[in-house]
Image (cartoon, rainbow, N blue to C red; front, side, top):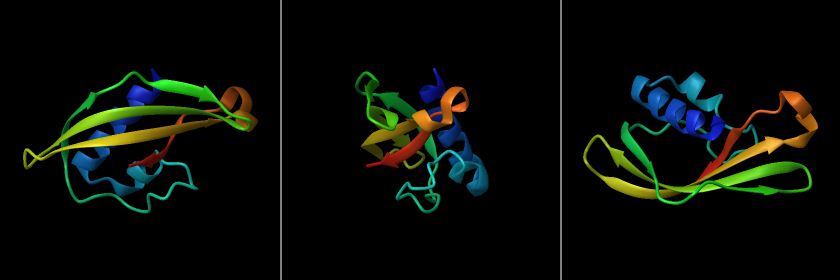
Length: 98
């Protein structure tokens, strides 16, 4: 699924410290303005991915547990968007991580 690929790409770009490719995963309107200075070793979904249709886009939400390189764990909600106006070319992007 495209959303899982996005989650994996985010983890990879964090690990590789590739900020340009990392930021390309996010919607331009996302509040995320830069890459964190940490590495994520493992991302485990804690809920099903829920997709809802909105007026202008599809929104997907999933709660994940992240294991960072210092063995610190955190639970985050990841939000993804796929814009209807992009038609067949529409792709999922990360909207926010809380």
